[in-house]
Length: 407
Image (cartoon, rainbow, N blue to C red; front, side, top):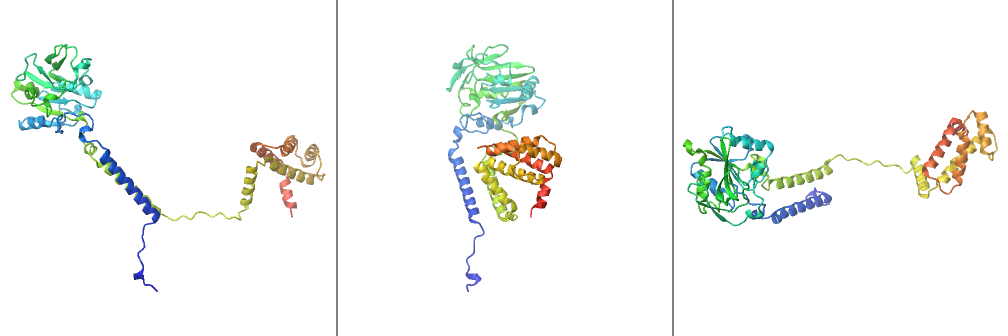
């Protein structure tokens, strides 16, 4: 006899479970490959934004680092405008081409920030969605993808040392009312400033002067430094600069950071794998339930089989005929009458001898006779006739007597 040492170890994984795990692993590999090969490169993932975290030509990392090296009080702002400091007199907020739209409370918070003495540097064509009083031109020729040079039209603190700037205008200002046009055509200015309460708003038609590729063009650097320095020049100290990233989609939360990484995909794949493992384990380790076995000798098996045959053969008339003849036979025996007695005579005799005074017996017998001779009877009608005959049989006490007489 072979010893236990000679026996080969058997696999603990059922073949069906092994196939399921292999299929799940294949699906995970396909999903990972799809994410790796289908995802577009960073340069094609949506429009370029002047973010302080971007080192691309359209990013604003260089301007942010420059402010830090100059010792300015600058910080990324990843919270809603409603959390801006109440003392806005020594503050500058940079809104460089925001992507997301503000809510009503955020609009009010931005207006209150300027009204209390703050300064907002806004770039891009969405100025009217943040400040309803701002009106841009409907001229389509104002927007272009090429760098254009604009000379200063009016001396101001913003244009000091910046007689000529370069930018890619994405829009143009409309009707100039209380605003001051600093650069561009008098009818289509590209740099505008205006007072609002105790503060001021500076609008650029494009973010070029603060981008990585545009900050070194012409006098763009001087324009940018004037924009973040001019409001507090009289007070002798530099303002607190808040560079907004909230409207770029940057949320100051851990989950907001992970949403821009492959972590959510990894978590989804781990969840799918965990469910598969749990399902496999539960199938093999759960309680064993033996399905009930119905005996073929069950008393109802004959009834179910016979009923199925009648249903497939549409034998409703035969069923009604069988019940009709049985009822007449039992009733005739009880009344000591010949089996060929007409239905009307049976009904009269049942009323006198058995006390069943109901005109419905005769109608039911007539319906049963007609249905038993018909070629086709609906199942509902056949069931109704059979139930009525059973009811009259019970009322006349024929069932109990018939069972006693049955050998």
